Image 1: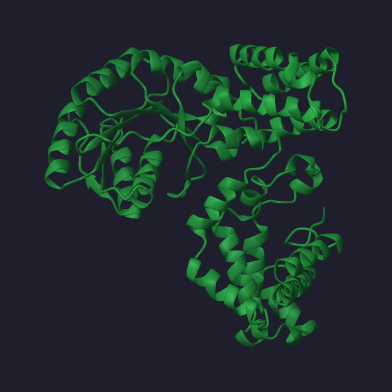
Image 2: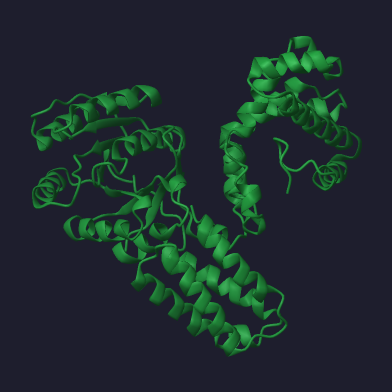
Length: 458
């Protein structure tokens, strides 16, 4: 999310960053470019007007014009106001009620409601340490009930059965009763969606809401619908007392307009963003971090949290001990590191959170397809145990065999082995010189033409 907006804004803000002085004319010109970038990113017009006005009123005052670094001061204002439009701070779910805390999920058909219920159940179970039950009130699509049952098994939470033709209110009342007997902390209620907003749909969900009085009513919306996401959210917020929004399919939306629009138009915070189909593809939404990513400042805090949650700590500790003792780095170690990287979303997932990525040419970014890491792992897996422990054994005929076994060309095998050699050098420098040695190794790796893993260059 935000790629196109970041590219448009990073050039404008880069020009400002180094300026010794800024005039009102400079600021007006820059804000004109910011306005165009926001509109092209499908941000709703009222949001663009309000945001630019807020930035302008602060920017042409003493805060920027008298600053020692006016360019940076202006960028900070743009960052702060973008974060404010999206909600300033992350908003937690309110679960401080007598159990079970009921969370009602609302939204159009195809927005990803059922998948989001599964993801949220996993999030609550693993990160909030809650006992979770899920129930489906979508009595119009048998597949929806079966899908939720499958997801509940996947993430190991309780599933309350329901059937087509049952009354949604009766289903949830029975589920609440069962949840109390089972000492459930949170009950997630999946509701029926429609292809468009209609009166019957709204009447049904209003009746359901009135009957069960949920502590949270989350509106699930597809980020790829752009301005329509904000309009749909507004219609739902007028019908239901929403407490938050979940933006889904954010990995498919390069513009990010929905994220900047929904909070302003509904008045309710974006609580989560969904990425991909996997059960762990749900992140807490941090407006300040999102603003940093839009302005090409990266999101190192989220990256650190991701490492904490997804890296195998036991493997990481063993590897750190091995490096510290100066033991030989081999292809088994490289495969472990690549698999850890893949668990964190691969190269694309990591690049998205690194500062300065807006400055990297599209020709380089386009080479990050998500297949680089799995391809390198496949190459290593096609080697014998002896070859993985001792890569020097890989002569021309062995490399040809490995290429054939992994479905790549011998040139791909050579690129991967070159990358291994660079990593091996970096690890030896780390064991010899600690963090300074590692930094020297990384500098040599990037400056020596190695480029990113997978063989492509900057």
